[in-house]
Length: 180
Image (cartoon, rainbow, N blue to C red; front, side):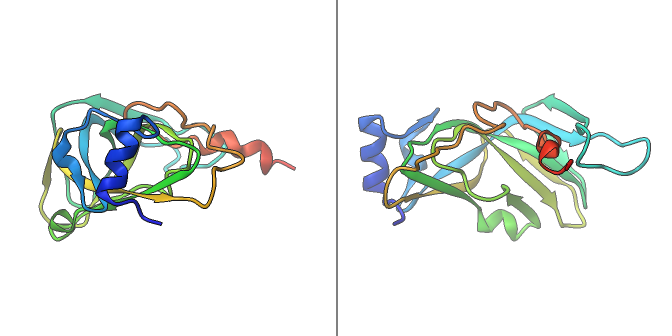
């Protein structure tokens, strides 16, 4: 079941959901607006021109209140907000329609798992022919919360737990599963 504004506010007040910083106006009828943080990461060029999943990927990370996203460019960014989800809530990121209509694609790779704690890393892509200026503090999407039937037996404790800033892929840490 998707949480309503009333249910979100109740969980924030009783401490079973934590979002910081948060302004009351961010709570919408069925979601919470998320704002762009000030950390951006770009994948560095590989000498071979190939990114593999076996080795750590190099990123150039910078902190800035503004970033100009070039046409066809992909970048990681973080939310301004830090989230602590309980074991019975999951969430997913939705981009803002008004930004999508400008050609800015905002995504995160799947669900935000129950038990997750951290800033959310967003994948941003400029599908427009013009550059798009990104500004820290700008509403870029919304987080929709869904209550599960019960608490997860194994809440998230993965490799992105506690992340701050635009966190690059850590897929290489999964390699031992595939080296058989």
